[in-house]
Image 1 (cartoon, rainbow, N blue to C red):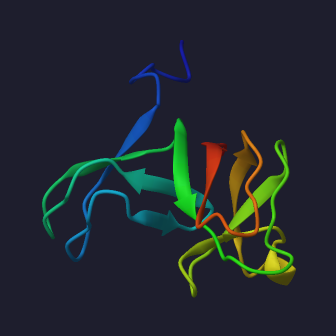
Image 2 (cartoon, one colour):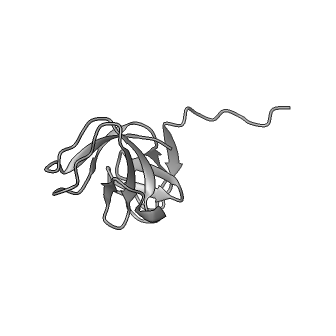
Length: 113
């Protein structure tokens, strides 16, 4: 007897937000991080992308450059990508797929779970 049943490829997962979610919002559910591709209404089923490549907000200024291939974490408090896990406070998001300079406001990331 099978112990598992295939549902779908898993590029997106179902999500019913408690409050409105805007397209592009990063949503953290425990250690699962997804990005809303479309606006979602509170209480209505939508979906979060959990794979893919996205440009995501990062800090600018001294020390904020990111190299291609770097592991990156989501800082939910400041709503931006960080280069460290914040002593466990930040959630792993994925890897940079291209470098970002200190003057860049975003970094291109491939999501990883």
